[in-house]
Image (cartoon, rainbow, N blue to C red; front, side, top):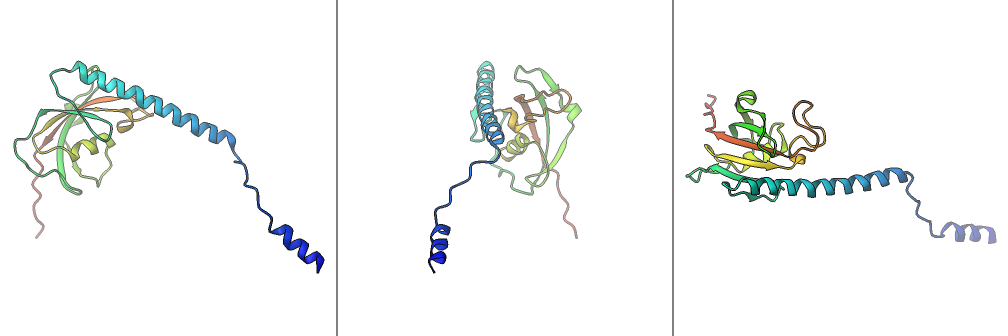
Length: 177
């Protein structure tokens, strides 16, 4: 009886928490997070400097971390696109010094269903706030563009970019009867 009570007593003792098994991974994740925070601050400064140099435009800061300015604003209060709406647009990509990377002709006209197709995060964000016939300049941080990979051709890693996007009239979709 004494033996059973001793076993029960010692088995109910507090268990000690285990230390992380992979300390190197924790160190890597912490240093990666710190590096990304520094990159974000640096890119934000670059975007603000670029906007300041372009004194003819009145840039607005978005909650998503990019800046935008209207070159042509729609005069009507047409509704903003909703999920599933088809939009047509054309755009060009420049670096923050306005050096052309990809022009409208090489990128072509794009048809896109809002939030239902794959597209760069920056373009998805931009098209949600654009009405037909508007032309808007966007200054995107790298995480909304090609991020740490670049495009493997003309766009480098972690490169903030300037997009000029023109939203065209959406195509008329014929009803299926």
